[in-house]
Image 1 (tube, rainbow, N blue to C red):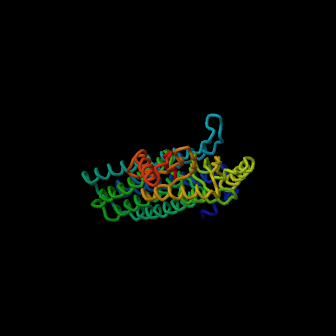
Image 2 (image 1 turned 180 degrees about the vertical axis):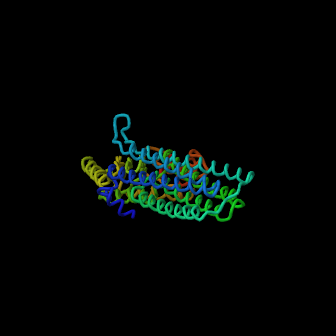
Image 3 (image 1 turned 90 degrees about the horizontal axis):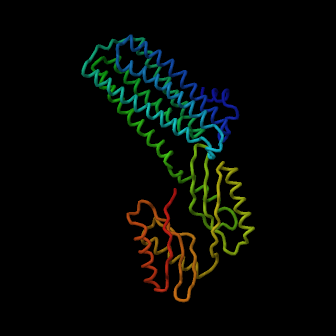
Length: 384
């Protein structure tokens, strides 16, 4: 069914890097969600009247809020597909994260309202009337919501859309809520309020999870380690590139990635040759990953025995302090009285030492080996 809908409504469906294709996916998901949730809200409203169950009535209202979530998702998709302009040179992709944030707030609101109504039901119980029609409606509703969750999941997998991920989780939470409502219809008023509280807690946990994930995206979550390694290995695959570091990836919404990196080349490389290699890498990264990458070339001594030995010495000292640290941009400059070892020191955030203390430890260890070694260290932190 999902594949058929995609085939009918999404032209060129495999080209998910195209903002128009992504918008078509988002529109399909949102419109489908609006239609299904409005139908379910009407059906559950009837079931609630027939059974007198607060769980069923709350579940009907939940479907109305889900329809609103789908409207928000639709607006988010439409606005995020707008092209870049003078005021927003990186595009409007992060609007999708804002719409996912709005959906998470609606989920939390639904959890709160369900919890409140369930407590009231426990304090002031009212009879729940078993109805075959109500039970049948709720059973069909569970199946519909399960399909809708799987439908959203497939769209999210194809497009990596945060909004689709949010409404997918919302749909699966609805399966739980409706299951509780069905149990209340079957087992009566004794179970109604307590089941409502249990489901409200499940929904609350899910809403907090969506909220946290979306906030991380907005605040600047690091990219996936596997993706970083792919980009680094791609850069290292070119002739003349001996190292890569300080890869920084900025996420402005799915399909809108901007990045910068430092690539190490031999200091003996001709400037024009280095420029050609860098240009080639940037073009091919953009073609393969759709990411705009800017590379800064770092000239280093390649094949110099003394430099290699001092670099290895320094790396061993750094690793003895913490295996999570590393060095790059290593240079050796000899002076009349000192040998200057100049390098950047990458320090993980979880290391419980301040930057000055770490640098001082490295300097002390180097001076113990040879008092003429003078370390000029620039402390840095990992971006991924």
